[in-house]
Length: 280
Length: 171
Image 1 (cartoon, rainbow over the protein chains, first blue to last red):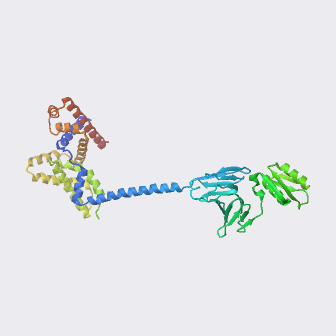
Image 2 (cartoon, helix red, strand yellow; image 1 turned 90 degrees about the horizontal axis):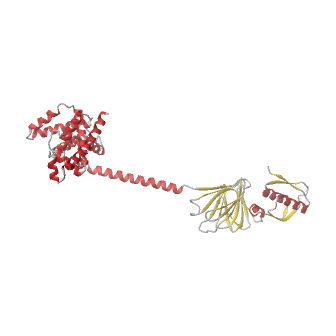
């Protein structure tokens, strides 16, 4: 600061200091006095009050929305199997899910078990559901819904067709919109085809539908055609009959045997020639 | 419907109040008078505003109003000599410069307001009441060294305020 500025400062300081009075020239106090006299105090106070109230409300709405959104945001858990891969998954309620190859399973971790137990799936999946009557277990596929309380069953969802096999207990199988749901009990199976738009219930036992899971192939006076189909499904190969006698029937049980041995046993038993070709 | 809202008016009021008072203090001796004059000037403007009279430049208008009211007040008082002195002192400054100076004075005032209580007391005894350091020391039962020290610190703070103001205006 040069001398001129210094002089000016001294002069102003003297001017201000000589007139200084504690608590005077307070603009807030002055405004209160002014507003009271002009009758605008209330209005301003009112406005301020409302602005504060409005801010608080807005904040609350903001937090509330955020909280609700956060609460309703699904937290998906997805399990996917590759071709030929088998996978066991335990759900939070210790329901066991066995997945065949090329299958997917998805559920919302936040909602699962809250009121209901809901999973979505594609492909072939076997469920052993932990019993809980208060929280029904539901399996959704593109076309159908299977609801149970506590049983074991399999859902096989293929394009256009969804099939359910019940091993124990009772399940409710619903498909489409207008159809009456079917109640299935142990040993029953049912399928829904998108084409026919109806549920087909089969009471005959189809033991090999679950063989991928049980590792057991059972044939009980089964026509050869069906044997070939089941073997093909189980081993993922194409099997052809090189002899011309398709009317044979087979009764046998195979426990997780290699395909070669199975074919050898069948060929020798029925005196035919079944040949496998690796599936393309 | 007023030309500007009460909220806006409050902002203008609080921003201009202190500088206007210090401007009024160039004419009036008492802070009470200065505050009254400024209050009246604002009341006049508020009244005009309520009747939808548009005032192009609030600031300039208010300084004019405060000057006129202050001069009227001083003229009414017995001490005419003091009034002429004041006016003579101001003649070499333009209106704009006077406004700037009043704003700087307002900052100084605010800076004094903010001084620590004890330092403020010592500072005012010296600069406002014109007491010598020795007298202040005796009155407050402290050493002269303390008085010097406190006034030095007060001046430093106020000078810094002033420097900031000058920098602001000349940068």
